[in-house]
Length: 112
Image (cartoon, rainbow, N blue to C red; front, side, top):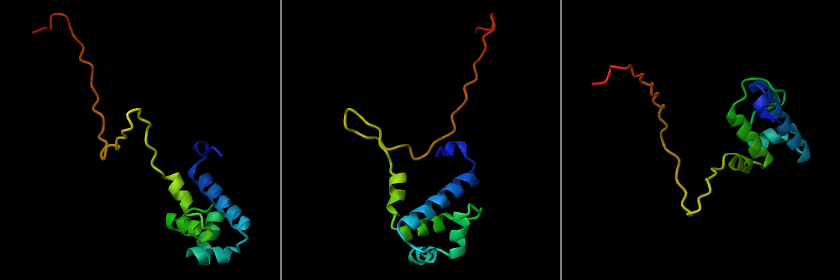
């Protein structure tokens, strides 16, 4: 699914449907999944139904209950750029706003 084309609510609904599908694949009852992961049943149902207000903690707890917490590691794995020298550089710790350089227009006879 192309998440770039969806709004936030549609993405949450899709993630909830994927959690629900994974639960059924593993043969877990919904309450069993909530107990294993430490998530509340109401929060689980809200996620599955695509309702707003579901926390990231709930999502993590459900992944834990599914035994799929390592999927977050894959999702957020830092990818280093290939370097022919074999050296990889760390990204900058702080990113500053770029200064805009206004082009100074020269007017003839303005030279000093």
